Image (cartoon, rainbow, N blue to C red; front, side, top):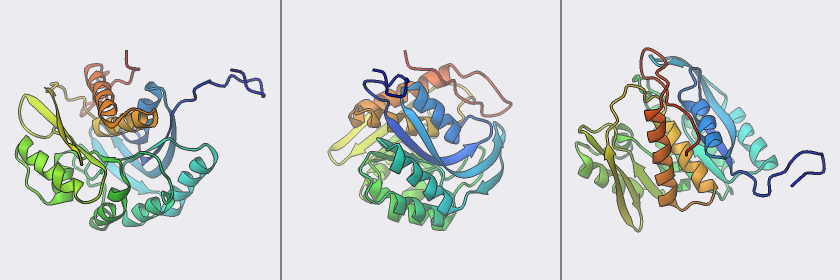
Length: 272
């Protein structure tokens, strides 16, 4: 279909995904990974940048926070003009930013994927205690699905997790705090097999796979959450969106370009 201005307009426009997250200068995680993921999966990526990080595959060396009012203004600029079909929330950093994001989302009725980013792969803290509490109180109830890894699940629930059974119990506890569903990622637990738990009010489902032996896993959490948001924005049911998102991450791990001297980035390619 051709638009009035001479450009081509798609008969079925791509899903519009608003990403609220920090920037990763190395391109492996944060909004850079989010944009690549959404684009590879056929969506249209927009961003509200919460922080500029100085990082590479070896770790984070500096963080410059964006004022909360500017974060919220970026969100409203995208939502009010272009519109949105799904939202992915990543690194927020401060309670002020959490509250500004929650306020800007008031009245927005689209799937929200909350990736509770707390600690970078290199160990740097990416959120303070007040922000973590605000996230639980203000953003968890807005989320269609929350995607914590094991350390984040421990921090959010105060539950000790030693195996996949513990992870399931903690995910069920987190669900009681008001979110729509929990996708608890099992990559931090030991073993040659890893299990991700999808926990909803209707029950739970295990996604189990062989562990991929690689050090090039920088940005897996960001990538999974953005792929999940894109699938939901495209109208997929939650389970189908999880399957697509996990397949995209697996492909990224297997096709990683091998860059950097530390935790290298994934490979970003459209799914076959």
